[in-house]
Image 1 (cartoon, rainbow, N blue to C red):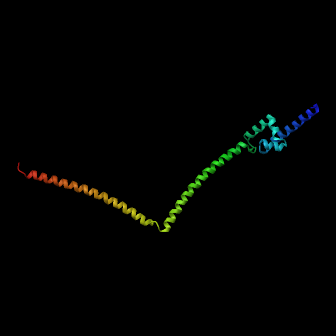
Image 2: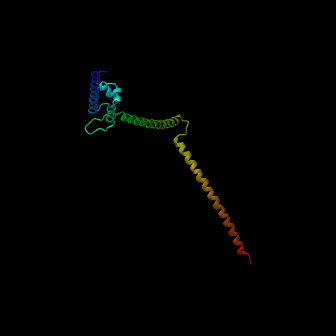
Image 3: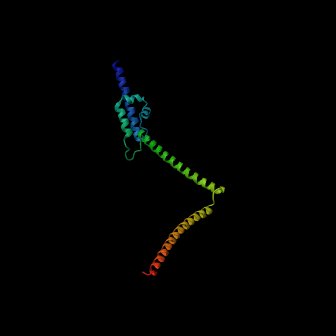
Length: 172
């Protein structure tokens, strides 16, 4: 290659570098998309140009991951978009779980309502009466048990009383 060709390539490379730097500055000012593809498109260069020039690539990565200063618009980076996506997916999972819980609850309520309206199940007041009857039957059984115990105690007391009376009435 001749010297003039080498100088021409260097000048072309310098112009491309300047376009990339201007595109990066503009993206930082306006809060534009800071990715290799977006900057290559804005600077009208091939992405491989950025990958061949490590210093430019480094600047792109630093700019994409640099926090926004006061007064500037937030730049959307790939990392922030991935984080937003992960958060949205987690929220979607939580909401899907909640929807399933609510559907199950609604299904139970509608099933109970249909059962009550069908007349197949006992009306609520009859059901309450049956529970009350069961409770009273349990109380009666307990009371009968207590009565039987006291009757046995009374019989034992009477038998002891008879024995004592006989013992007192017998001459020694």
